[in-house]
Amino acid sequence: MTLISLLEHSIEHYGSKPALAHKPKGGTYQDISYAELGESVHAFSKGLNALGVQKDDRVAILSENRPEWAIMDFGTLKAGAVTVPMFSTLTAAQVGYILKDSGSKIICVSTEAQLKKVLSIRDEVTTLEQIICFDLIEGETPEGVIQFEAVCELEGEETDPSASEDDIATIIYTSGTTGDPKGVMLTHANFIFNLQACKSLIDVSDADVLLSFLPLSHVFERLGGHYVPLFSGAKIAYAESTFTVAQNMGEVAPTVMLSVPRLYETMHDRILRAVQEGSPLKQKIFHWGVSVGSAVSSAIQQGKKPSAILQLQQNIADKLVFAKLKAATGGRLRFFVSGGAALPQAIAEFFHAAGILILEGYGLTETSPVISMNHPAQWKFGTVGAPVPGVEVQIAEDGEILTRGPHVMKGYFNNESATAEVIDGENWFHTGDIGIIDEDGFVKITDRKKNIIVLSNGKNVAPQPIESELVQSPFINQILLVGNERKNLAALIVPNFDTLKAWAAENGVATDDLPTMLKTREVQQLIQSEIRSRLTDFADFEQVRRFILLEKEFSQEADEMTPTLKLKRNVIIERYGDAIEEMYPEDS
Image (cartoon, rainbow, N blue to C red; front, side, top):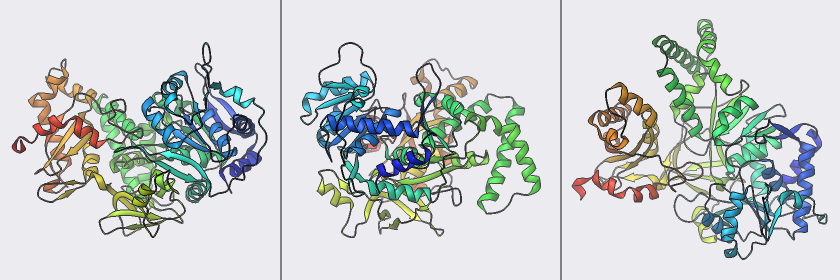
């Protein structure tokens, strides 16, 4: 059984049903059936063969989510080759590193902008023979570049690459929060085991529609938003961009949607901001509705049926408070799925009070990816669910989460020493995450092992729970704790500028000069008050004693975040080294 044999099964069973949908600029969504997808995959596979692609050759892709991504992925696998996906946000230098390290023979690019990146480093990559461009190129086509449509028209020979489930399907390069990224080798068997385990817990069928906007180059979307729906007869609609997700949700009306926590946090912040701008009566009705929804949620979590009165109140709250939120998602959403980073428990509880369930899971690129997950029949907020069927999980003496099973990667490409560092002699993969398994068998992540802050008094502090609590403040957008080998914790804080400016204006603080506003006594006291009030349940050594308010957000463009929106702690700490030192004058 391979990914191609599973696709062929779907084509046979769901031939005329829509598999993919995309929206051309200025147009409306257009469907591509399973049968049409199969024909395109077959044609592209033959084209790759005509270009000299052989079994186990590497074919890279630098593209946003679009139908050609899916065609390229399956066409490459059908040719017996290996896909090497890359985030479209990577720089030319980062693209060059991955192409050279993987020894890619061909790269597919989406646009002329992505093409320019590759052309700028092409001479450095000795293995690269051909560039395939999805969009039409204006003017003269550069040497060594061919259009996607032209590849699909090439008459390559039909070949049987004799793929097996143990063959490498893809090499996915880790985001690299520290050091150079490593190529994770995942086999057909890795993916098939994982998707079958997930499908046994979450029912996805040919009645489902998914809106895809997380990068397909990320393994979370690759499995959950690509392989699972296509092997279930579902339809995948590609968002136009990350900026049009809200609009596209209304157009597509998805039944299932995958995202990182940032989307849910943004939705939550916008809702609260709209409430604050409303009349006192609307605010009172909203908070009443949330309290009713929270009571219903609490009863459900305890396995109880809400009382008749509570159910009546819930129906009223749905109409008065939550109807617009559900309509904004398209009105058909069964549940959200969250992964890639920690989802604040308060966010999950808020959405469930509104009648929308967010199912959080856990995994890594190296585990293809799912290790554990909450699912509709068994979930617990604040955890990442129980291990999926067939996956072993145990906690090491130092608190690190270890896992073993058919989901674990084959290894790092051309890097046996790095592989040996994370997979021990008993085949346990060392995740680098710290966590526990509770009395009900649910996994709870506390932090990354390398993120643990050791204070000068020897106390170990896991920053993630503290940061997750503080970003619930409407005035705090991003935060990074520091304090390694210091007496106490301090924080670099990016405020929620819109909310903070609105508060400042209402309280007589000038807002025309941002740096000056952030340093005013009133704003400093506001943030200090938020920190104190939200950390009352944390130990004394976990309190944030000092902070600095930054004037701009952490971003991918500044190399401060990975493509999956994780903060690059080492980069940020080095970049703001002088500011950090100012918070510890006694150490100077």
